[in-house]
Length: 503
Image (cartoon, rainbow, N blue to C red; front, side, top):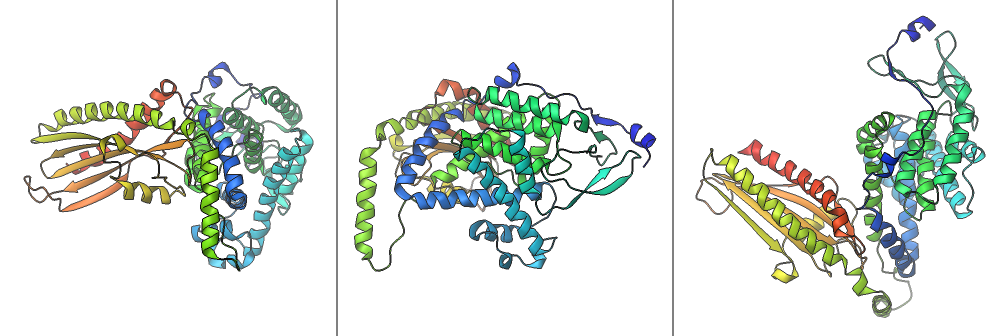
């Protein structure tokens, strides 16, 4: 490809110097996740006292999951889900990888995975030792991530694609502008300006570090780093590693951007290229909430010890649990129930109004019936839907604590032979009282042989909320009502679409 041909390509994104955080960026609504920061920090200390080893193992699995998925995102390799689970659980061992489970040699895969894990460990060491984010650290991080990557692709001054040695821990010498499937070009920072752009990024980050929201800052740093694309290759992996650094410095958890969210992630980066950071910040916030909810579900019981009476160990464990409960500020943590009841009331009104609107629309088809029921300890029916909630939580690695209060809103509409049952459940998360609850939504479509039948002939269950809505004991209801309304509206839209397709 000649230089003329390159110059004639359509520029999908034209490079410009990176920008500071804007006032619009600072207005991105994070009211639902911010209360989780302090709730998680307090819960982490309790988890450490209860079973520090289990928390360490959870963190190790999180790091290994991040290490696997970061390379899959970049299409460096592929690994099937079963093998991924084994590697995350047991560590990066070549014996766990069958040749048929990946598209590269198992030995090469393990080398790359270990490099990527080492980079995250380097970030963790940086946080523990309170090191400053500098160009030197970025170079060290890049060299670690790409240790077993000897070459990469580049385009020379004549427009020819060439294979060149990959410099480990040195900024790029050639442009690295990707050509999209439609033939357009996405421009990154030219090599000439990389050093000065990196200086700006690091200087602004040092200014923001102590004053900005960590999720907002992690998303901003990640995006601006990708705009510079300072290395010949490995930029996405380094960007995700430095995002981890921001979150760990704020005493939060690493986030795992996995293969299932690749499209959402890339679309969010594209929106940020067009000065809209909201989708990327929201994506990061959802992933952080997911990590916290999973961490709260870590087993708090200590494992049994060989040679000691099992009964005595159970008694000791119970004694320790009771002591922890006495020591904790249970009443403060249970303030989250007040938040849940307020949102339950809001959901009741919203669901009833939506079903009434749907009923009017469906009246042209036939007679319809709408019902809304509240659930909770104040209604003597909080045991309803426990199985469904537990099953949905298990699939995402969370533990629902039904020792604490459970609330729900059930809405249903029946039109002739089809009934939609839509449930919003608000329940505690964590092996012990954590002060954190989530709202999830699920539904059934029930089919009846005849319009007058009471027992359904068939039932189809589905989850209608892609992400849970999370609240903590220190959540201010007025701060999150708008976000909760948006979440509930999206969940109802999924359920109503399924119902409309069936009626």
